[in-house]
Amino acid sequence: MLEPLIDPFARAINYLRVSVTDRCDFRCVYCMSENMKFLPKAKLLTLEELDRLCSTFVALGVEKLRITGGEPLVRRNIMSFFNAMSRHLDSGALKELTLTTNGSQLERFAQDLYGAGVRRVNVSLDTLNDQKFAKVTRWGRLPQVLRGIDAAQRVGMRVKINAVALKGFNQEELFSITEWCAQRDIDLTWIEVMPMGDLGETDRVGQYWALSDLRQELSQSYDLIDLPERTGGPARYVELRQTGQRIGFITPLTHNFCESCNRVRLTCTGELFMCLGQEDNADLRAPLRADPSDNGPLIRAIHSAIGRKPKGHDFDYSRQEITGQMTRHMSHTGG
Image (tube, rainbow, N blue to C red; front, top):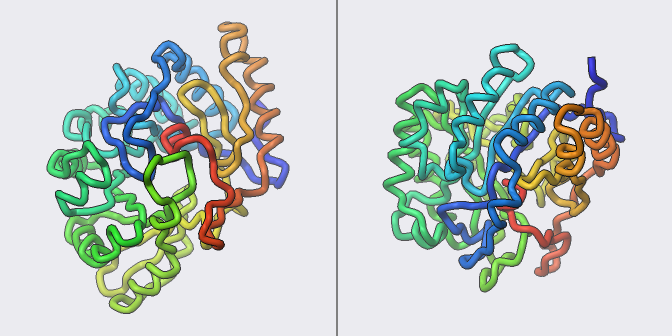
């Protein structure tokens, strides 16, 4: 039995977010610049290396794998990776295999993902307006995403919408998005925009809509009942008494969730980030490749990294300037 992953603040690390590519077929304004320079494909870990890394984390007690990007479903042969990970679901070592996607490829992959054991999927969707969707994603088409959501629900996957709260953009859609999700039996989580990377002309402070304000606005039409349940991530949930639906809030700025953080993030090049809001990271590619037949160096490197996991992050927009900003883009670590 391998020693489990416990950080310096006695938090058990049992959730790994894995970015399998930095590429995406959208260019969402809060995630990346329009003219992104992506990594040469040769620098990415192979799918076999990602399998070995993830399997090592599972052996060390990780029970939840969330596959992210970029957009994970644009990675060539990505289903071979999902199918390989399903063996850990079959063994019982892994409790959940899931992904976060922009939905553009879900129509194509929903059935295969379900076959690999994926039962929940998070879809990033910030507006139900065609023109606004094209504006916020720059390259995206809303009907394609909606067909993907239909396909996921049709095969039996539980869908959750992740909507980034953007001031002056989707404020007026708060209730229409809520009602749309209720009609379709889809969960909804709102996320505060985070200071990640240089977005060119985009005004980060101007985008920020505090979820404390959003929640107050929502409470004017619904009775909000706080729920104790958690899904292994940072969201705090309420139930809307009138509809029975569940709404989540991810609040890295107004109320951070660091005290219960059980997560680390692995990039597509093998960097392990112990905190989304800190720059410290560990190179796992070198020990991974040092000896393909011996996981000892890799396991020691992982334990060493977890030993450096900080207590929390430090994002702050309070003085109308960005403090705590990360130089890397959101797509680098997949949120």
